[in-house]
Length: 254
Image 1 (cartoon, rainbow, N blue to C red):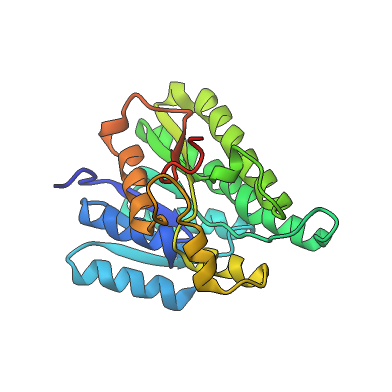
Image 2: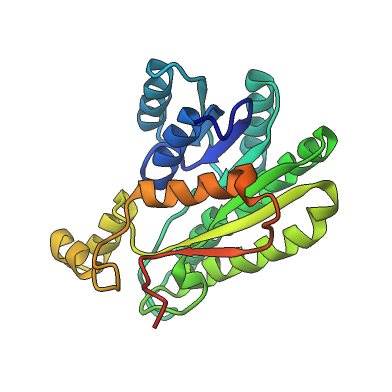
């Protein structure tokens, strides 16, 4: 199937985890993909895989917290791919700490990567999408953007902000035929989750096993979340905007 045939997508945090899985899936569904990340080795690995499978992709190295680099990433994407139809604001970090434990610099970093980057990329992408007749924006939030979690004050605050930023943008830009939604993943087997275990001083394998304590009795995979992103990027969700799609194996159901 080619559910994204002819589309041009920019994915932040595209070098690993959910971003990597989504870049590969979007390309297999016919999209040309711009992989944006600080990790040049990982990003170029993704683009090579896409090209080896017959797809089209570019890598753009960018710090998503810097306005000039976000603008340049959007401009390079449009110049190389011929336009921009889908923006997946997926870059994110986590710091596991209470407000008492958290350094001010850590708070600022989490908010910059998890929220400010979405503002910046959207700011530069939306005028181009509107001029072209519409587009799709997908933001990565979290289950902890809907409910609180322990020792994750900055992360929860940032992901809660993403949910309401998504809704506000959907209201503002719906008349321009731009749909804006967010995904709220549960625990997903990514390098970010492994880093979380290390921050808490827990064995990674045990941490991952404990994450299976949910109705579907397994941890999420990057491919699970990529499928949700594909739904929101495709015409299958043509009447869906302003929603927070929970993809967590039932973790928030009870």
